[in-house]
Length: 283
Ligand code: C2E
Ligand code: MG
Ligand code: MG
Ligand code: MG
Image 1 (cartoon, rainbow, N blue to C red):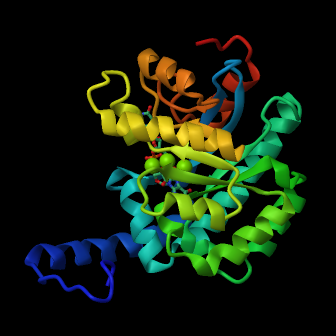
Image 2: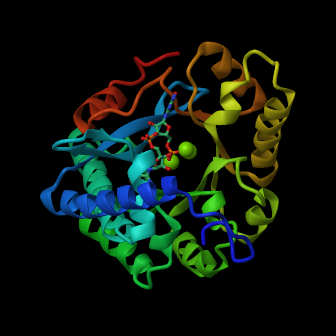
């Protein structure tokens, strides 16, 4: 079903195993939400010109009692297929906004300007999503400008149904970031159709940047920066791991960046300290 209506695939034993695995994971994930096994960690986003943090992205973690750490790359797709992403996503949104409110109370409103929350397209399709966002913002005392919603470029490619929702959020003042940008298939038409504020260049393009061997990826990275400039969008590069990448991205015009070079995803307390300790943070 995932590969579209007009295609078919052979049903292999491996797929039966995958399905059983997914079913088990889905039921365990349900328990995880109820039992509170999910946590958020936060990865700062830096302004590459000043070295100052401009905000943080909330990333969900699952500490399973027997399996140990389960990666979101594994359980988010399961949550999306089972529909559990809706309650999971609601929890993430509220928790992330509450955390920003706590940071602002502790370190001042200027210290950490915004929070990025990843949202699945499934959540955007829920009728009450816009109201939910408005309620969470007002209950946590944040303003809409404090929230950046990240949706993956590929998830909204055929998401014409969610356009109205994104438009309403935009009118409210919530910012929209296209995540994993460059990996989707209709980037340019999306930019015209959706009220986009931020482009997040996918890590895969950052990976090959420094050695210069991969002209194709280099070209995409450069083109995305140009596109952002012309359209007056914020350009963020994700997954920066070394200084060469950082320098090249800066030259290309990336104003913002995220990556292990600057900071890994951190528990809330550490992230708050790191961000409020700026401008000591120079790279
Ligand atoms: P994403 O939103 O594109 O997040 C970036 C991912 O890259 C994160 O992985 C982050 O830890 C990782 N990363 C950041 N900098 C570096 C780096 O320098 N090197 C390397 N190797 N990795 C880096 P993570 O936390 O495992 O999340 C994976 C994906 O799962 C996210 O990709 C996002 O699509 C999804 N996800 C995570 N949390 C949520 C959530 O609360 N809701 C939804 N819907 N999706 C989420
Ligand atoms: Mg993201
Ligand atoms: Mg991304
Ligand atoms: Mg990604």
